[in-house]
Image (cartoon, rainbow, N blue to C red):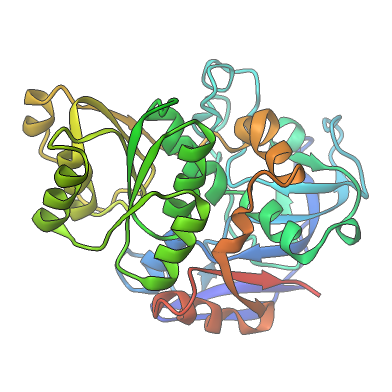
Length: 346
């Protein structure tokens, strides 16, 4: 079968590898219908983090059809159409029961890898997989894209809003205009924010942020961006801030944009060794966040919202590619020619 392989920084290719098989009682083999490239996949591609040459690629979002299941699987069966989240929660440990299945305590291999492929082995699948009614042919192209977003970015944007305790009437700042940040705008609106300030320097992303519910756009960066936020909030700062990038500058901006006592919901994968906590101490800033609770959010709120047509997060996929053209998909995101690159599987 075909699978994406990380060759070296700046090069991803497709190779024929052995098709995965059931190896554990809670495994599920899934034939992928759609997958995609995540912003976090670009760190190694850009040479910003170490990754072994000629290794399994880091793709981790998919929807597909169940082919076979292990003996412990009771919730899905061959033929089912499913969302394969990037997390693999068990549903009954203390973390999962508290709504933090991104930090499941019952196994160490809690994250997907290598799903930019024709077929994948999904581990610990009994609770983590999310069944979609019907079959792919029952849905429009746009709906399939929105369903795919529930494997990661929509749930991650929602996680930022949830841990930041966004509530009715809040003023929210969203730091980051990638797919996660744009989904954070959707989530803030879902949770009742009255004002959503999206930080974006790119016209196409600004337009989508406004479509998703942003009320204001801040194109500036650094201190100029903070000054603009303070002007928009009468020098108070935001009630909640969603940090959706993970860099030193984005975290610093998020902390400064928050009013005293506000919560910063961090879902940008951190790539900086240190964070200065002194400023947050003196402003009583609450810091929360981490891996998203994908299965929890999909089952509780997001799948229904997509199926009912209340939200349309699939619009973050602005370019599509075949699996054979996986490197072009990475290039499109690296060069900011695509907000998020969709990969379709024949």
